[in-house]
Image 1 (cartoon, rainbow, N blue to C red):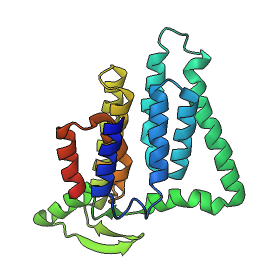
Image 2 (spheres, helix red, strand yellow; image 1 turned 45 degrees about the vertical axis):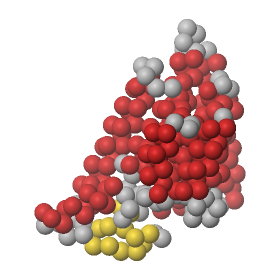
Image 3 (cartoon, helix red, strand yellow; image 1 turned 90 degrees about the horizontal axis):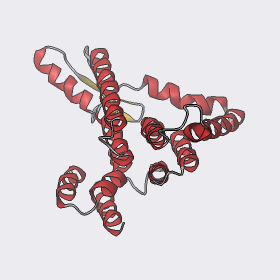
Image 4 (cartoon, rainbow, N blue to C red; image 1 turned 180 degrees about the vertical axis):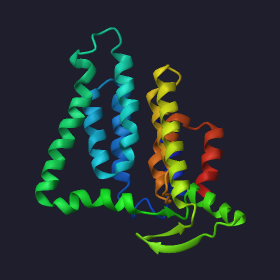
Amino acid sequence: SLSAAIAFAFYLAVGSFATALARFDLIPVGLTLGAVILAERKRWRWAFALLALAILLKFYALVLIPPLFIAQQLQSRGSKWYALKRWDGILTFVAVCVVVTAISLFLSVDGTLGPLEYFRNRPIEVESLAAAVMWLGNFVGYHVSYEYTFGSLNAVSGLSSKVSLLSTLCLVVGLLYTYWLQLRGKLDVFMASLLALLVSIIASKLFSPQYLMWVAPFVAYVGKNNWKWLVSWGVVCVL
């Protein structure tokens, strides 16, 4: 809608004016938005195809697989569990991932697998909520030091492994609860997708300003020109 488009432009201009045109995140963002819109319109194969491309470009979109899959299963209630219309979306997703990954592996094995190892080894970034928890550890005897590695400023302390484990548990619990609410019909596919993205950002060991782009179109789509959404998310973008 026009109101959602204007809201998205507002969030992008205020919160991402320094990153929107300097990062490629807008491409997977556009793909995830298109995927959820297509899911809302029950065009499952196209929805999962776009989602697969988004994930292959940026791993964060992985958390959107369950909301789309749950939405398709709820829409197909009444049909047999093995009916093709229940599984054509996820089968398309797998096919796209296999084909693109095979091509990528053929071109460069290291280039394909490198990002997985890079992400696994990254420490807790200073801007994340986990780093704030580690900073609080200073007051109970756990000194925090900061080092510039992996292209960002990161926090290191004796609490690193414990905080990392705690954030992972919070991520799993938060996502499972979101998916359960959607399965019960309490959330539609757009709200479930937005909450899944927010949980993944909050509980991640990384946070960068461009992450606001991941959720901005979903916030705009759900909240539109409602002043409560504009004010609250406007404040987030200003910060």
